[in-house]
Image 1 (tube, rainbow, N blue to C red):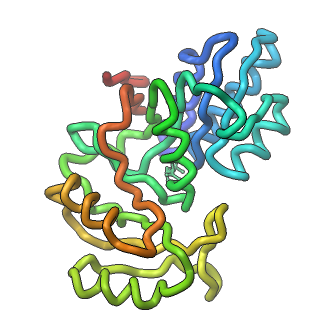
Image 2 (image 1 turned 30 degrees about the vertical axis):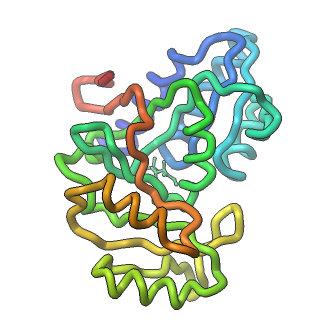
Image 3 (image 1 turned 60 degrees about the vertical axis):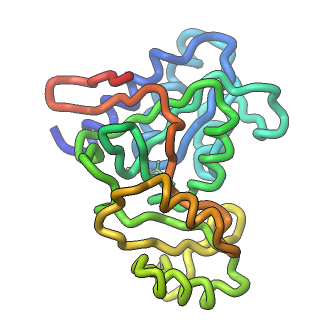
Length: 224
Ligand code: 5RP
């Protein structure tokens, strides 16, 4: 199976966890795109009532086009379950997110959800975090000075660019990726990044997820 087929497999499997009447957080990325497609089909076929809370403008557009009702995170009183992708997950279910520059909104939705599920193809599972660059959403003002402070700490920062321009998040901030190689103490690193002025949010998602569905050759594997 290709990586894309594994993403589709877990996207479809995740929809079985969505029931009539739920308010569901919808993540961002290519894996979630498959899940939202499958959810659109389920809503149409079974006529169930779902409210979606989107973690990005792209997912909101896709869901709306498929007939899924979307509400803002501030319009709902709770979120039953959020289903999102991830860039890397270690053996303790700690993760890196933000490869799609959406981790700020994703974390806001995740921390306001009763349950969180990640859906990934098996290439995302790792013993230790860090081989995938860690994204930071940063305020443009003073970001070059922040970059220098990150360099001085040995975090190997790189501005995320596309066609010679800064990649902008849905909140119009910049993204800096940290090429750390290994993250042996994710909690310590998270604390340090939380303390740095100019960083709006980092892509370390620690102690947030309850269930992971991993796409493997033999079928979707549900880890709790
Ligand atoms: C976006 C994310 C995505 O969930 C993550 O990048 C995984 O994406 P994909 O499913 O395309 O591999 O964190 O900010």
